[in-house]
Structure formats: C-alpha cells, structure tokens
Length: 379
Image (cartoon, rainbow, N blue to C red; front, side):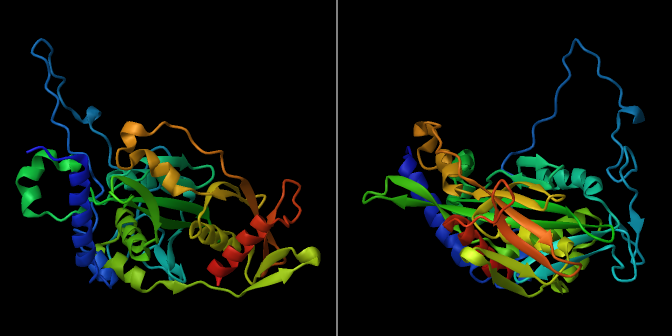
C-alpha cells in the first residue's frame, strides 16, 4: 500500500509525540548522558571497495597506515599523562589535575583547556563534530567560530514495530520533525588556556492550515542538557573517561560578575561588567549565542562582534514538507549587521556597547534592544 507524503508526515509527528513523552522523564544530566539519547549519524557505512580483476592490489604496509591522531606531527602537541593515568590534551596542574575544567554562567557551560592554544585544538574539534554525524557549515579558525549544519537526532524516533519491519526499507522517510544545530566558539583565554563553548539551536516543523497540508519551521528553546552532553563527549575526545567528564560537568565552577546599565546623554545605553576584558569578551560571546543574533565574525583586537539577526526558519525552509519540490531558492534581503563592542575600562572593569562604523555608540532602537537582550542574558 502506497503511503502519501502527508501520512508519512503524520507518522513522524506521532513518533515525535511519543518520543517527547519518553524524554519527559529525563530531568537529570545522567538521563541525557545515556548512550541512546543522541544519534545524528544518518548515513550508513559505505561498502568496501573491490579492486578490479585486471589491477593488482597495493600491499598494505606501514608507509600507508595513517599515524595516530595524538602523535606530535605538524605541530600537534603530545598528550600529557595525568596522575589518574589519562593521556589528555590539557596540561595538568594543581588547580586542574585533569588539565581542564568546566565553568558556568547560569545554565551555560564552557570548557577550559589548560596549556593549549585554539590552533592546537581546532583539528580535533573538526573531527569531533564530523565523528558525531554533523556537516560543518562554518569552519573559521581565524575567528574561532565553528557551526554545524542542521541535523536530525534520529534517537528521537521510536523504534516501533512498524519501523522494525516494513519501515526499515524506507527508513529515510521517517523523521522526528525536528532539527538541531550547534555553534562552537573557541577563544584564547588568559594564562595560556583555551575556552570552548557549545550552544544548541533547535527548530521544529509544525503542520499548518485547516487541512494540515503545509508546514512551517518554528524555533524551539535551546537545550542546556544537550549542550552539557556534547561538552562531556568533547572531554572524552580530549582524553577523559566517561565518569571524569560527568564529574567535571557536575563540579562546574561559577563565573559571574555584576552587570549594570549605564545611561549616557541622549538615552544611549551601555553595559558595565565588573571583570577584565578577557572574561567580558568571553561572556558577551556566550550571551550573544543565547539570543537570536548570530555571530558572523569577530575581531578580538578591536573588541568587536559582528552580529545579525538569525532567521533559522528561513534556513530550513527548503527542507520543510514538500519544500524540496517547491522551494524556489529565493532568499530574503540579508539582515542588518550590528557591531557589539567590548572595551576595557581598567584592569577589572569592561564596557559593552553597540557601535556604528565610526565606533560611536549606536542610539537606534534596534541597537538598544540588543543591549537590553545582553543585559538580560548576562544577569
């Protein structure tokens, strides 16, 4: 019996509802850390290549075998052995016996790796996301910005009796109706450390119209538990055990400082942070990631984040119900770019403002709205 596109969509929406009920009990990080909670690997393994009968297979010797990824080649650092016996990317010290730790600001966490530069860790971050089934949409080591394309968590689709039998033949047609994307910000911190944050973005496809024959993508809240899960996976990539990574997540160190609004003449608002430029630069980047403004570029020397409003639904339009058949490829006018400036005001205080191309405080309503959003996120 032939199944229509609409009935397939109804099937996947029902599957999603069942999955959400199942996940409703996942109130703790330990529930999310279960091995079956994420599966973004949609592609299967390709079959081995057969050598044509008229060609001779090249014998496999050591000269054709790729070296281990942790071997110090091309400037890659040699891993360090901790007192616990781990060979880790971080450099162990008295404060961080495992060579790394987790810090948090509210519900946002980030990884601090001791004694390593962003350049040294970047290749492993590339491998990390690719190994977890993602395609990199932005891969910019010069700015420290890495984003994945939208992907589906196949673990959200229940493996029911229909999928186990007939459905396995057309498994590609099953969908949870959700997509996830992850942004990684890599920053050079003080005292020879590298700060790595992972921010989750999510969309859900909703049926619309009285007859439910069309759909649109709507934004879902970011999931801090899912971000913590991938931070734990990244720490394991860097050499920690499953138990050690979970413990560091649990023992995350608070990193907050007071943020106040400073109203200048004319009503233009700026923010004052009671911390050094290094910390303020990191926290503002994390706060921007928690808003609907995407960081397209950043210049640490000038203290500038180049941001624009991110229309996630527009990005996913071509993937919607019937979207691949009818999407014309026409895109909206590029969103306006804003410049978020972080500047030091002494050794222990920093100022944050939205500025224009001349470096003057932007007094427009949109700019002041960004300041208000940052204030809410930083507090």
